[in-house]
Image 1 (cartoon, rainbow, N blue to C red):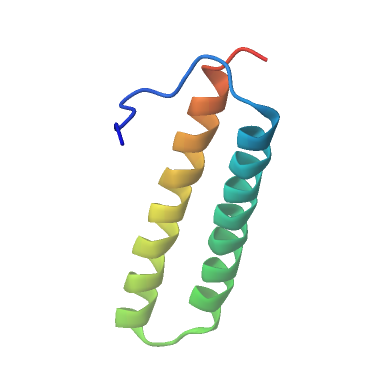
Image 2 (image 1 turned 60 degrees about the horizontal axis):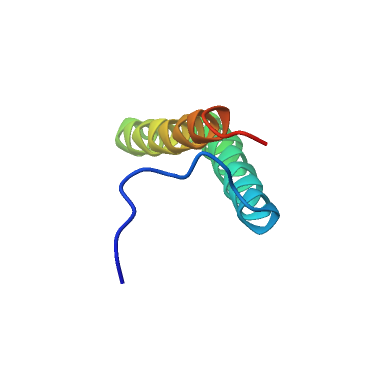
Length: 72
């Protein structure tokens, strides 16, 4: 099995659905983690949640960039 280093310029409908699901999952993670951070009073937990939220935001933005580079 070969590793694809660059996404194709055109994606299938199935791939698009999968990417949309990943976007939705990351967005839900961002919102949920943000809410947990608001409810926490422990600074260590807040720091961990903020780092996790940034990770999900980074993944979300990478997925969006991949979609912007594709032709429909």
